[in-house]
Length: 103
Image (cartoon, rainbow, N blue to C red):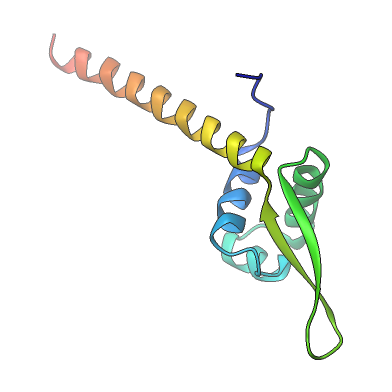
């Protein structure tokens, strides 16, 4: 397995949101997460630069351009790897705390 790229928890949260609904605007994501629009935009640019998400321009019937965000295969793999690491870490913490209670 390749070395896991370092991303922030906020970026991971945004990847989760994109996976659920890539049609949300940055403004809507900002409102739902409490992040500023600037922070959402900054995180999206970083995720696009490292190849974890892709932005597609979609024209709607009003001749306005909208964006659709999707996780790339690389992004899905990264999200999965980070989630697995998180679960392993939390299980280790649980086991350690449980051993303190049982001594």
